Length: 447
Image 1 (spheres, rainbow, N blue to C red):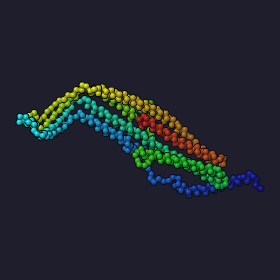
Image 2 (cartoon, one colour):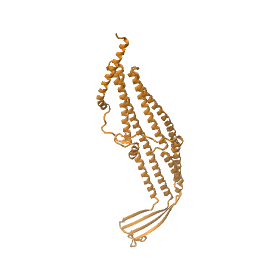
Image 3 (tube, one colour):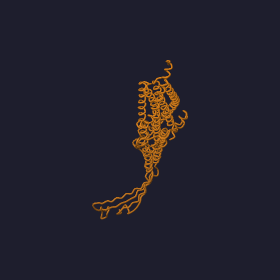
Image 4 (cartoon, rainbow, N blue to C red):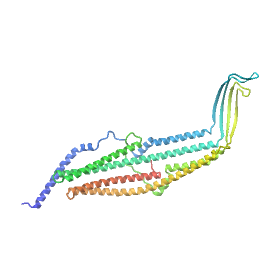
């Protein structure tokens, strides 16, 4: 005769044997169906996008970005304006020719004063001897070339920062896909175990349905993350000037960020927009200081050889003449005083813009430094939380398989582990983005 305790022990041993047997069969079936499942969940793309390192991506963008092309064209245009301004201070040589036909000869007392057909030609050589205003204009045009180059460098910096941010966005989306793929594996493993228990008559329908629901939810999140990855790669491809998406080739390792005080100092000396603004103020001040050239007389020497056929009583067949022309500006209706006022206003405007740029630059440094400190601290906490959540999920699975807890604890642990690992990925991206912002704000971005 068996006791109730003995019958209960035999029942538990039989239940465990049934679970082990059905689990083994389920594992075999799952291995056989795995290729089809992977093919259904992860469709293979027609062609993989080209991969770039961060340095390569920035170099490609700088070659193809329209803003960079426009900035380089502005440099060429400024150089052409220098040549245009310089030409006014160089000698000029002009050739003239004229043919005149009259209705008849002009005569006086039988002497021809003007022939019916006249041909005249001359060369006029003009040499500016004193042209202070034109010399100053050439110098100002050369300053504008330097400003165009600084502006082009600032455009390149903006493009590099935009590409780096987009590159990091692709990196974080890859990490998010990996997190959701691991979460899906955990959810499927739990769903297979719950279904095996239910098929063996040990578990219940509620656990089976709840586990299957978690698989569907996790898979939906994985698909959304893959869609976000596709958008991020397309955005990077647009910045690189590609007709398609771009892929990242490596993990970004950014340089160490500077401390606050050195960063604030670098923002005033190394940032291209600040340097360009400072140079713009200096250039406008030089224009004001050169205002005296508007009052300097212009002295020009001219030489004109000529040919006149037929000769006239006053003009030989060939000859030449030379002149010195002195032009003294006496009254211009207030043009010079108005121009001086306009130049002084330009100095004030450029100075105001420079002060605003400096304030903005220092503010960006302070904000980026503060955000980086918080992001680094948050990354450590998020990584710790993700590890603890993974441990909690492992313990929940062990407890559920031992019959010490219910399915709801496992599902809850799976969700918390997925959320904690996702939060760690986001925190890691926040730290990288904050470091990138600080390097860009201080002008230390090494690209």
